[in-house]
Image 1 (cartoon, rainbow, N blue to C red):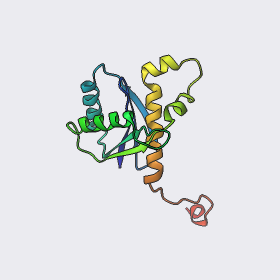
Image 2: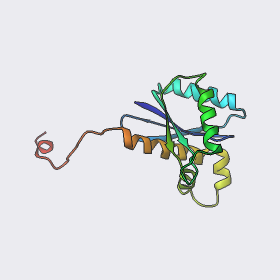
Image 3: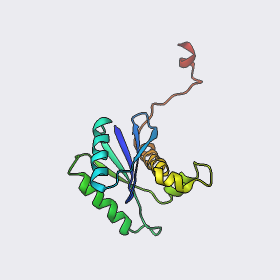
Image 4: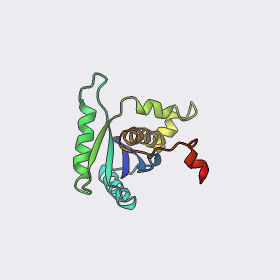
Length: 150
């Protein structure tokens, strides 16, 4: 499993990468000026990383309903299917952008938002949530006798 995490935005698309090791890492956000350019850049990233799955943050309303923003994500996913055909997963992204902005020093929100760094950290949180639920790590007990015998 090689996943690209996506935090969709009208101007910027935050992205991250994770694999069977179960760790998501942020990648530079896609900040091209037009949506077709961002779609092409995302498709190229999928090819470069040999991704097998796409994991999208899905902006449910606070009451759990699907609203306007979630439908925007659905439309973006449909457009992306013209470029790549991969399994697509939707993960509840409520409050991830707020949590992502806490990873940075206060007072730089505008600069960080424009650069897409907050968006890519949000994509990382989204993907990490997905990986935590879907990647089975081998059991490892550092205190077992077998570990000491080696």
